[in-house]
Image 1 (cartoon, rainbow, N blue to C red):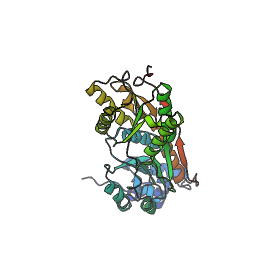
Image 2 (cartoon, rainbow, N blue to C red; image 1 turned 60 degrees about the vertical axis):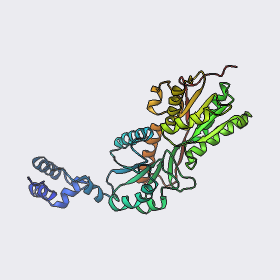
Image 3 (tube, rainbow, N blue to C red; image 1 turned 45 degrees about the vertical axis):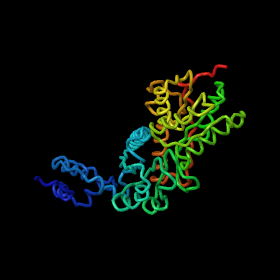
Image 4 (cartoon, rainbow, N blue to C red; image 1 turned 90 degrees about the horizontal axis):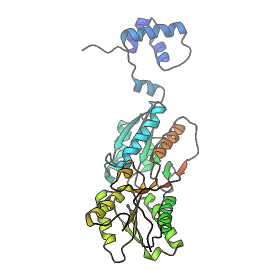
Length: 338
């Protein structure tokens, strides 16, 4: 196997010291134009490729950031990954991906894994964390720069970028009430996740303001299509079944649409359905889904910019960024006829 050329080989061919080549590679001044030309010719002749990690460590920057997601299968996570990677690339950073596979024990062990093998990361973005899973104090021992994305932990002293779940819950309820619905149900994700708590609160406050809280049913569910299906069965088969359902995520809403197809409920004639997130596939559902846009692309981009500001020393104050959601009207909701 042909030996890979080293910095010393470049220095020997260029007739300069190894330290001078190192200065050139790391963009340190005081290397004359004539010497730069010699080094460039030597690099081209030897087809030398510098070790970017070693160069980064010398500069105290590897141009690498970590992104931790709950799993790789979630449609939300796929969109967050794409957004973070695209924005990072604009700033010449690469992203190292990690998944906890939705396992709390994996979340708790992750700081040790990162500390032992990935200390060289310039910073880390934690997406979709759970308060009882992630130990932020442990992450702080390894990483100076951390940003929470899409979900955050109340009262933590860590930068975060999230959607305003309370406003999102209000938007969904106000839209359905405005369409004349009075029996409105909500299927929420796990209530131990703060974002879902906020969506429920916004939803309930609107119904209370309109005197409809006594007619609503809120059912806690999981976060999969199958769990949305099962929750829809439980809600619709109750007495005083709802004329509209607000699902706490688009994935849960897809489960509701699937249950409607299975049981012959016409959407939106018999049952209006609204989701939350505006994932890419929501527009291609069997019945294009009305939803609350959680601005996933914007969240990912803002998280990267916030992290890089920290890394580059441009920001010292804690960032609490809550983007305002918007309503996206499609075909899954209809005015309730008297």
